[in-house]
Image (cartoon, helix red, strand yellow):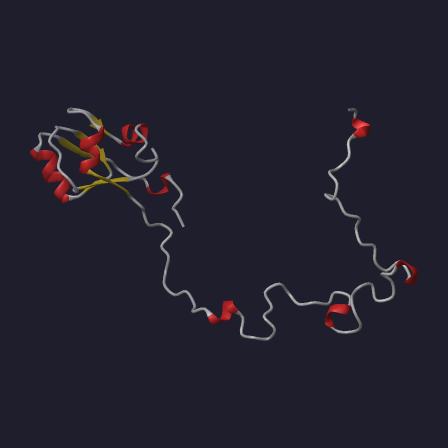
Length: 158
């Protein structure tokens, strides 16, 4: 087989409809547009979302109200039961180490929450720590370091 032998599969291609080429073509005069009316005119037809004069869907839906604070910091929550399962005793839990095990993105601000228990002493570095988590970590012999968070470090999510 050579390049000049290649053909599309049978029935996969169709000749395009050539309209407006005279009455002998079978598609002349009104060129398949019918007689008169909005759709027969040049530039005629309705826009894609037109619903025949019925009140459009976008106008029937209620208006969105409220305020979206684009400067709000969205913390990624990590619970104590996850730290207990993933890290060994004496390990340093930092944004980099959490990103290394695939729990968070390294640039995200992190909050440690108190769900579950921790029996190992862990050195936790996070941007926020809940009071419950703080008491459980310190009771297990661990320590907490609060990291500063620069507001412009990452673009806010919308």
